Each structure stands twice: as structure tokens, then as C-alpha cells.
Amino acid sequence: MGTLRLGTLDEPQLEVPAPLVAGSVAELRCRVPDSCPRQRPRVRWEGTRELPEVAESERREDEAGAASVVSRLRFRPRREDGGRRLGCHVTLPNSTLEFRAGVELDVQYEPQVLEVSGPSEALEGSQVDFGCSAEGLPPPLLTWFRGPQVLREEPGVASLPLHLAQVSPQDSGTYTCVAENRHGRHNRSLELHVAYAPRPPVLNGTLWVLAGEQVSLTCGALSHPAPIVTLARGRRVVATAVYEPQVRLELPAASPEDAGEYLCTAEKKASGSPAVTPVTPPGGRDPEPRPLQARWLRGAVGRWALGVGEGPGAPPEPAPPPKPARGPPEEPPEYAEIRVK
Image 1 (cartoon, one colour):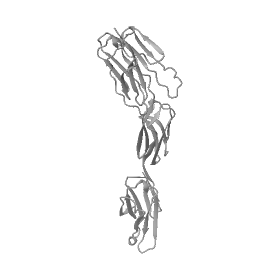
Image 2 (cartoon, rainbow, N blue to C red):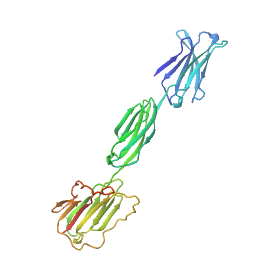
Image 3 (cartoon, rainbow, N blue to C red):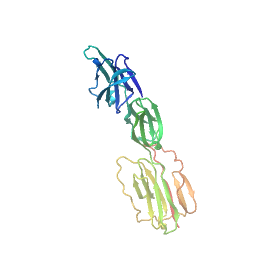
Image 4 (tube, rainbow, N blue to C red):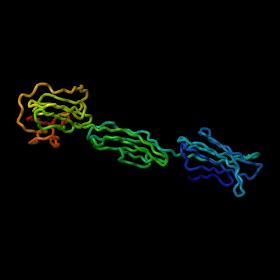
């Protein structure tokens, strides 16, 4: 840390540590030659009225045969004290002579993020703009993070925007603006949730079983907010989940009457949708079981699986082009057919 000296050898010398740091104790010294014992100088500090924690002291020093009076001013500067003018006023007894030395305080301080702005939710494919403003001296380095990833940074600026041209579900997360300089760092964060339509539903379970065996079907789809997932056999809804990622159907003991085609659908959340209570399988059975064969279908694209076994359904396939409609296209449902031997 350097020292700034003002004045000449014949006048008061004002010693100021450079720079001053807000919150840390600072000490200014006013050094005055004292060559005449009968006219010992008197030192008075000016501009200290509103300074916090002010303390003054004085002592006489001799260096290489040259005597001087040193007056010390201790205080704890604040941010708002930057630019304040301080000085020492020296008078001599029985004399009209007076001397002054002054300085304008340079107070540096740690940065502060004043504001972060941006939406908390956005639709998939839309653009998003975030804003961050901060202050500090020296001017801070501003950085935008998503989690640990650095997205953008700029040194010595008061504000830093962040533009996302086309958001996807992977852009959901915590966005943090960090301001830092040599005296410290500060940050503020916000959360972004990217809403997207339900992805193609997935129906997992047993393709076909022996009579009396347990059957388990899981129907699910990803979206934000969580979709309404429905599992139906023919036209009959057998299970549904409201704003949950999946629904599960358990048949403790399968019979030939349980054979049939099961349909898994996922719908996006609609404003004001009433709550739906899950429906258990009804007592009635489909009168005719179909041929002994497992079949998986997705939209207009079919995939056949012969034989027996358990495991996931057909791997995802590209959704067919949507038909013209006023609203956004819905994802096609997934079908599964259970056969009981």
C-alpha cells in the first residue's frame, strides 16, 4: 500500500494511505516542522464532522535532528465517504501564520449485485433475456453462470445482459450473476423453468403371460409442467395420473379376459383442468381375446414383436408430421397389446 504526501518540507505534509477501503480502519497523518520550541504548531483536522469512529492523537518526533509534530486521524471510511475532502489546519501561537493541507478521499469497496432480472418460466423454443446490474470500486468483473458453467463475463462494467436465443428443457436451472473485485465478491440468482409439451409416451410391461401370472404396466411421459397420463383398454380408462410423470396398473392374476390392446396417452396441462381420480379396472371383461401375439404400435408406424418375454416397449421412433390444427400438435399415444395363454 502506497502513501500519498502533500505539501513541502516547510509546510504541513499530509500522509494518506492509498487507497482507502470501506469498512477498514484508515489513518491519516499530518506532519508539521517543529523548529521553534516557543512556537509549537497547533494542528486541527477539518471535514471530520460526519466521519464514523473518529479518533485523534498527536506526538512529537525527531528524525536526523529535525523535529516535527505528527497528528494522527483514525476513522473507518464508508462508501459514501468517497470524494469527501479532509484537511489539517496548522496555526502558530502569537502569529498570524497558518497553513493548510487537504485531500479528497478515494474510498474503494467490495462489489454488490444490485439486481438480477428475467423470467422464471419460458416456453421451449422461445428466447429469454436476463439482466444483471452491480456496483463496486474498482468496477467489478461480472459473470453469468448456469450451475458451474460460465455463460458470459465482462470486466469493469456496471451491467451485463445474457441472451438465450432458443431455450430447451436443458436450459432449465439456476442462473447466477457474480460480481467480484480485489475487495470481495457478491452474487444473486434466479431459477428458470422451460415448459415443453409431453414427449412421446412410453408403455412398459409384460407382452404376454400365462394365465394366473401377475401383470404390471407402466405408462409415462416427460413434460413440464408434468402431464396428465392416461392408460386405457379399448375405450375404457383403467388408470390416470394428474400432473405426474407416470401411472402404473397392476393385475394380480391375469386371465384370458384381460387380453387386449392398452393405450397410453399424455396430455399437457390445461388451465383450470379439474382434478381426476385414478380409476381401477372395472369388473367387466372384453368378450373376445385376440390372436396370441404381442404387438406394439406408435401412431401410424407399427412394429411387431413375436415370441414371449418382458421388458420395455419398442424404442422411440420419430413422431409423424402433425396434422394442421389451430393449437399445438399433440404427441401420438403408445399402444401395447397383452396376450394371455
